[in-house]
Image (cartoon, rainbow, N blue to C red; front, side):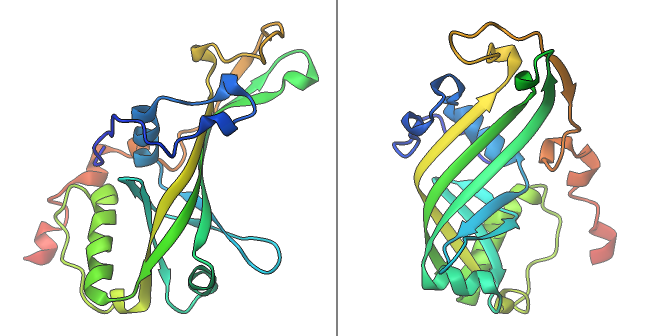
Length: 215
């Protein structure tokens, strides 16, 4: 994947807050690889009432989630007014079934981050962050430079992680049932890969695809 795997576990990864300690996901390099592969996060922003939740493309790098949105939309206004957010990135792996109804469950990976937000509307800075995000989705290069028109319409956000928890449940890792309960005879029904970069064919990252267009 385009992001370097960060080996040192950061202080903000606090899985002591995970109620089911047997589901805590502590493998930091694997967490970074997961975040590098996923294409969509869900962002929860405070409001006067219920939180405003929206799906966003993102890049995680060096303790920050990089995002952007329209300067004129509701999301930008809310994040300017109160620059704190919660971010969820998850992936369902398989549906699990066993004879007892209570043993209907899932295999999954899930990361939750609480962040503070710095936003920027200066066009050179917006373009700089956009190129950083393209390093995830278009790391092969071969595209034309970003012009000034689109960056003038968006605001970029650096969401700095203050606390993160990570959970997973994967049967191959022995995560069958809560401690002290008998191992359920699960049958697995895997889901399709979903919106992750590793599910795309190699041709999606062909740096020569638009060469004739430029010529």
